[in-house]
Each structure stands twice: as C-alpha cells, then as structure tokens.
Image (cartoon, rainbow, N blue to C red):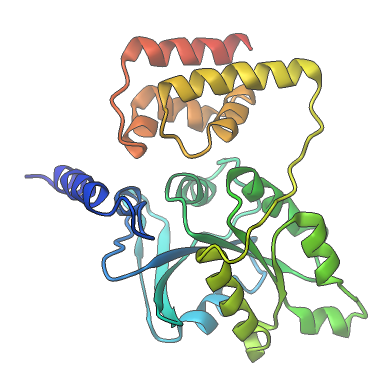
Length: 285
C-alpha cells in the first residue's frame, strides 16, 4: 500500500469515527498533514510576514513544537500545542502571507488549510503599527471563516510611536475578538489563550464584517456560481468563497477543480463532465 492510499484510508476511518467530536474535521486535517489524535482543537496561526507571528507561536507553545514540510510541498510547517482548562490545543503556524489569492506556494498552503482544514480558531496576528496593510489579510480570512480572533501584536512599538489603537472599537468594526499583545514580553498572552478557548468552545459567537459592495450583476453571477459549486461539492466548507475566486479567474482554483484536487479535499467523486460544465460557466461569467 502506497503512502497516499494509506493516508486516504486513515482519513476515511477518522471521518467515520469522529463525526461528533471537536476534531470532526480530522480527516481533512490529516490530508493536510495534521494528525489530531490526542488533541481536542486545532488552531491556525496566520499573519503577514514580520508581525511577530513566530514570537506569538513560541509564547503559546514553549518547547512543545516541531517542524516539517507540508505534504507534497517544499514549504516548512511548524506545529505545537498547549493546554487550557481541560482541553488540548494543537496550533499550526501557517506561512506568513500578505493575501490568500494563491499567487505563491505559501499563500496556497495558508488558504487551503483555512478553507479545507476548517480550524476551530484562526488567530490572525497583525502589527499594531501597520493595521491598514495587515487588515487586507484579516478581511480575506473573514470571507472564509467566522471563527477568527485578531491578535493585535507589537503594542509596545505602537505606544513608543505615539499610536493609540482602540482594540475595542476595532473588535466592534470587525465583528470578531481583538486581543492586544506584546508577545516578546509575554504581555496579553493569558488574554489570548482565554480568547482562543472561548472561540473554540463556542462561548464567543462572532459576526464578522463582510465586504458587501456588490453590483446587482455581480450578485447574480455570485448566486449562479454558488449554486453550481454547491451542486458539485455539497460538502464544500465555503462555496461562496470558491465561487468568488472562480469569477475572478483564479487559475489555482480552476486547476484544483480540473485535476480533482478540490474533490479529493472534500472527499467526493465528481464526474468529468460536471467539472467541465463548472469551468465553462466560469469562463463565460
């Protein structure tokens, strides 16, 4: 039995045996290289480069971490863990990216993990000094998942530069929790742990801000595409986001559909003529 077949069979067994547990997405996570055995929740750590994301990761995990490569990729993956209350959390440090538009391998890895791995919490680390630049990634992630927590890092530098960042107002505007931190000094990390726990367990219910500047023609195109995507992939976590990427001509998503990679990630067998129909709609939209 080759490794791919072994992982596929193991994924199927996990999906059958863990349908109602907190790690119900264990099958897809295993395909993405993350084994949820002995863990209750999975946390994704995302953010732009140079926002202190690795420092946040180290502060959360301590020495409980290891590195490797993403399956079939040359991109390094770091993962670790921590305990909070009675639960065990596995945290996956995603590649630092400026967007999820998959113009690079790092962006593809980060996007696929958030979309298909469906982490219980996605912590987006942002630089308090460069919010305007960092919020682009935050808004893209909010299009994919509601289970988001913003870690407003480098607050010490913001204070040194005379910046007063109102994290409560930012949380109201984004519709998700925002926790100010200075990870290198351990400031705010206890609050971050508590916020992660509350989002993961459902104690905190978010209502994320969504970009709604859509013309009637675009709304119609999105609705039509979502219907087609849902019919083809009924278990797809976020068909609207995939529909938007198709309408934008995202070559990576189109290739994933044609190659069967998308169907494999959502455990489906899709007929070739159905794939051809979806790609044809995208070209004529």
